[in-house]
Image (tube, rainbow, N blue to C red):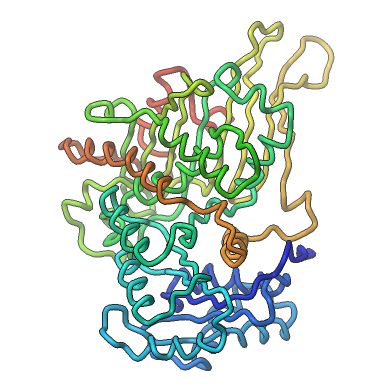
Amino acid sequence: MSTPPAAGPVHTADLVVFGGTGDLSMRKLLPALYHCDRDGRLSPETRVIAMSRGGLADADFRGKVDAEVRDSVPVDDPAVWQRFLGRLHHVSVDVGAANHPGWHHLAELLAPHEERDRVFYLASPPRTFGPFCRELAEAGLVTPRSRVVLEKPLGHDLPSAQRINDEVGAIFDERQIFRIDHYLGKETVQNLLVLRFANAFLEPIWNSLWIDHVQITAAETVGTPGRRGYYDHAGALRDMVQNHLLQLLTLTAMEPPARNDREAIRDEKVKVLQALRPIVGTEADRFTVRGQYVGAGDLPGYLDEPGSTPPTESSRRVETFTAIRAEIRNWRWAGVPFYLRTGKRMPYRRSEIVVQFKDVPHSIFPGGSPNRLVLRLQPEEGIELHLMAKEPGAGEVTLKPVPMALSFGKTFTARVPEAYERLLTDVLAGNPTLFMRRDEVEAAWRWIDPILDAWRATPALPEPYPAGTTGPAGAHELLGRSGRAWHEEEL
């Protein structure tokens, strides 16, 4: 499969990854950077500097990457791989340790190239964001051409998110801060904007007059082995809904921006979040569902996952599944429910947006069903428009829903880039369009926090669901009360 040519100018930068030997860096960031290098999207001078407490020399770090990353990427040209390894450096540093020599080492490494852009990527827990930025500034490493990338989760509620934003904002201007959500780098998400705003036939029907409801699903087959210590304090609502699913909702529901501009698009996304109807107090019982998977067959339950810390009261109360009925209070979407759903240990791995249109006003054929637009983010990115068609044959007319499908992998000869490739390219170019602004993050938390408060106030535990199933019964009742069903139930 051919690779895409470099898009636009190639920017030279020093990319400093704090947490550069961690899981995110080794599984996602370094493979993405290698693909960028292979596709000609990194300038010859661009360097990647990993920071960790590992005490590695450059040669040791390159050897680690060669051993752990090479097998996960297609190295069809050994010379390109060696060129990529040559970009890599390592600096040992311990954030919070006063006058750690690693800061001096990093300063020496960056000093000969003051004119370059500097991108500081914080692939580390959010509690380190403020201290790392402060120590960067104290070491004199923040320049007007610097940028900082913050990984999710950005806090665990609105006050903690505001605190992180304040700490980072004391060092970097808002224009220099890139809050990353890898879902926004997926090809289907970007095609959602093109589909909506570059095709005239869709916009007139993209409203409550023609659309019955919208479903946004992020389902995972994996559980949380070895991660219960983290998940007890995160849960599905914080881990997936506050960022990923709300981002997909904003792009689905936003008004057409006046232009394809880095701020115009983000302005419209914020308006959607501000228009979400709050879910407070006992309303959470009607509009939200919590679930936790229990053992079934060979699959363990959440409380029995191997390699995890012993379960606590928090373990019993945390949700591994949630479904929410959201409503947007504006002219376009009044009366249209948006159903958000995410869960672990489900029978399939799938992320998708399903836009279900209303039925025809008067059907002259029996057996019809409403049209449906499905935008699939994973496992195979693509778009399907389900239309009604007549099945071949004589006699009575028999209708069948038929998908008109666009698979990016089958339609386009170029390799479909991974999400992090697109986002890293945008960071290096200084383009913040696909990154979250401060007011956007905080607007999302303002909607999420009352739901968390309502869950904490109830003695009820999450509804159990067997591992490997589509979630608790309450999630199906959430739609069933209005005569609707989740997408897979109607297939």
